[in-house]
Every structure is written in C-alpha cells, then in structure tokens.
Length: 204
Image 1 (cartoon, rainbow, N blue to C red):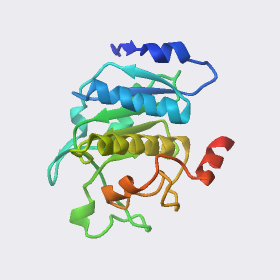
Image 2: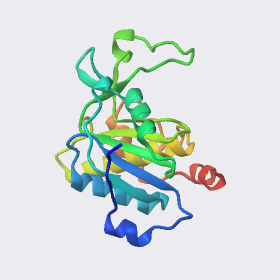
Image 3: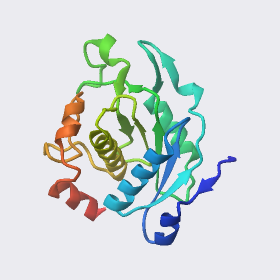
C-alpha cells in the first residue's frame, strides 16, 4: 500500500507481543503533537501497543455536500478497515475535517426531522464491535487547551471502546455514555470507565 509505519521510540521500548495493537492513521493535515497525545492516552488507559502511520490524504470517495462540506464517517470506517494490516487489532483515523453519519430511530428509520438527521455532524464513530473508528477534532475545539485535549482523549477512548465491544453506558460519569448530541456531555463525564464497563472489558 506504500504506507510507511513509524514507531515512536517509547512505543518501541514498551512493545509486548501479548498486548493488543492499535494503528493510528492521521488523515490529511492532522497535528503530529495531537496524534502523540492520543497515542499516549490509548497506551496509558487501555495498555495497548500503538503504531502511528504516516499521514495519508482523506479519501475523496467519502466526501459529501448535503448541508455543508463533510466526509461520511461510515465510509471512512470502511476505508480504514481495508488498509488495516491483519497483524493489528484496531485502526483509528484522525481528521480535522467535519464528519457525519445518518441517525436512525429504534425502528431503523431515519430519525425525525429527516433533514436534520440524514446527514448529522459528529465527533467520532466506531463499529461496535469492530476494528476501525474515526475521530474528528472539527467540532470539539476550545480556547482552553486543557478542555480541548480532555475532549479528544474522551472521544478517542469512547470510540475505541465501541471497537472493543462496549455499547453506550447509562452511567453519566462513564466516558462510554451517549453524548446525546451535546459537547457538554463529554465535558461532564470522567476520563474513566465505570466499574461495569471495566468488568465487560476484562471478560473479553
């Protein structure tokens, strides 16, 4: 595929063969500094090994312009799943572009009003369970860097949690709770899983 794999030195020093491995795939001009912050949060919390790929262009096949220029998150998940090596467990795409999906109700129909939810802007998306997720910083920026970094960590760990097999949690302090269409939900949750979600992961 012509994609070069870059190992951060700290990742090289700590790699263990019995650990799950996550590939971080920056898309387009995603910040190297922020990528390293995300890498560290994954290693610190889930104790996974991480591999960082060189930046690749976000695929134009995911581009849409229904309400505003965006990239379909479900399409990006399929792209990431396709480029993921068989030797790794998960792959996370990072983008500065706005991403979207379609929201459905409990009957499997597009949530009403249709014009609002047919192309709904999101912070991130991950297959549950699955091997790929995508995170966008487009909607989460904040002038306070501490809040901004806290948001990106929570969203990353949330979407990777979906890949591992965690569904949305009813515990409003758990980072697996549903954002319920509000960034304030993410600001209020702890950077931690509840005991029940931890128990589910331990059984996997």
